Image (tube, rainbow, N blue to C red; front, side, top):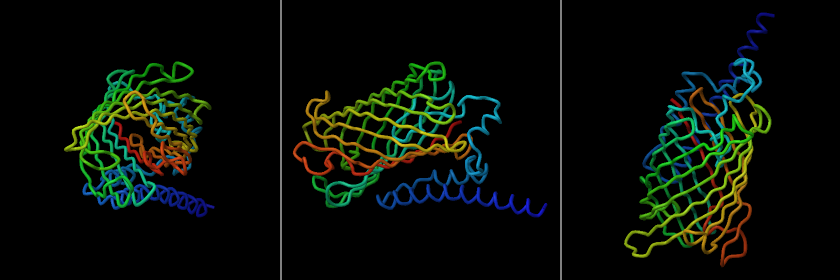
Length: 343
């Protein structure tokens, strides 16, 4: 009997370690793929950091087979204080902003694949340092790393480049606390400046701003959360050596849900609808896109989180091109991988 129990414990530990190794391998594979596709000169280092964190602290809690109910039993609480909803929905965002005095490092990497013709890859990495000033207000300065590899795409110059793309300041104000009200609401503002165009990789002078209202709600206690985002963005830009400025804007609607399968592991799905316009005030319609796809969020350790999503375009049209998917203004596939470190 004792030998059988020891063999069962050994088998359980091996399976948990294999799951943890699988996570790290997947993260490393995605990073190497993105870096290779863009011929990036700045290799990502956070997959190695995540691997070291797992080596020091053990595998994620869900890899050991724990579920959300066990966490409540351990804490002696029946609420979702261990769930921060900001990044559990993929591209969509929740209303949580962290606790007063909290610092957080975030690396959000978004890749776009596929246009109507040729080979297209664009990677935008947003690196933020977040500080929660009060329970309701957070500020986060940051910079962007852009990488592009474009070949034979109609309307785009062939280019391979990687460089510092610009700088932003993200501001969040929590208007309604979801822990004290039926739902949460946070207002998002992010002004920015860019020296590289995210879509084409060409040198540009660009000033942008984005606004968003982030609603979320706990639907099933400790299990299921939902969110709705309404966003508006605008930008004024001109390419280097050009005298004329171009103005554009967009309107977006996002809805997502995320379910806690095991303690620290959430899976879900989201829908995103985006409309692009010429002019800063949604003046002349250019095209639209409807994306759908799966999402995930997990805790690598107590203070390190990993989340991501893959969105596939399923519908959309553009002015002057009524046949097939609209791929002049929007990519065919958008993928995102995000690492957060709290301290």
